Image (tube, rainbow, N blue to C red; front, side, top):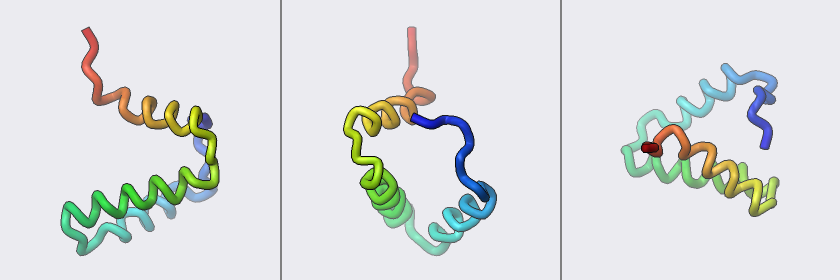
Length: 65
């Protein structure tokens, strides 16, 4: 899993992502995010890597202790 920045234009990508959500309901926005995750995950195709990424993304939301 690559956690170091690897997007050539992160600000441009973020702007495009925000723009893609404009005018959508919360439900549509969540669906867009889910579709995007699957589209980005498909080229990787390594189940273990995908599960590691899910765990890493969830980690800040899990309470410990």
